[in-house]
Image 1: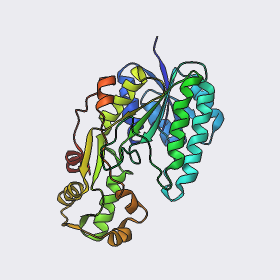
Image 2: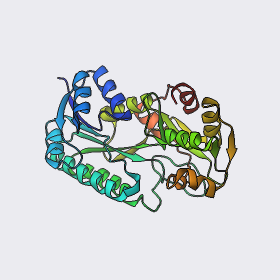
Image 3: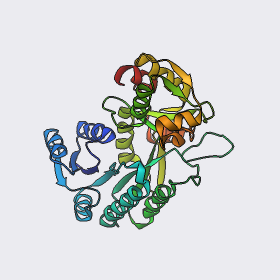
Image 4: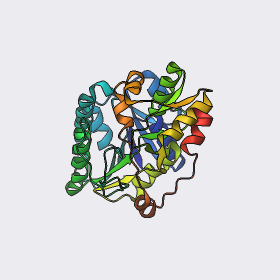
Length: 299
């Protein structure tokens, strides 16, 4: 029997690639669509559609209740009011989990490796705790709430994404933000006093991991979608410079703040994240292009 999966954020970068992978593997997909354009894109791809957004509690409950599993990828990306976005996300998750309670069906939500730490500059992994970072606490607490639902008869899983999920079609991620700032400034740049690395994953590798987690992920566990443990920000800046024919230089935090605004502080949170446990347990092996290769190809 073909399994039906409800996907929020189904037309975003990760969502579209995940839907394509689900369809390739024979799943039936129902996507949440908040616009005519999203509805058309999903239907053209052979998916069913439920109209609504992340504030539409009844639509979310319906999608979850009528599915054999949920992959929750939707999020309101308004970083200027991150707390409100995180609360909307939590309410949406609570609604879907309430519809799945006692079913033992899978529910996958998205977390982040940024803010996970072993301390003392050591790489973090799937068992590392979150640290207290201003503005991130709500999202971290939501992950804990999701995983705790494993005791209520839902196979809850958190897939932590690195700061950069890259590949064809990425127009809203961190790399496009850096590129826009570089083009405005007339040079690409990096901040030397940052921790100087970001972990990364190719979007196609991420999509394949999401489907593996759907099939094989264990209840109450977090997994890391990390293809590259740590790409130096200097290397990222140089790759952007080469692609856009711009010089690359080191700049101060104050200079970066003028170019990046609030996003500057996120660049200072660089971290090295590992995914060996995820790869071993789920049989996942990243095989697609690296971040630098994708910058050269798609950005």
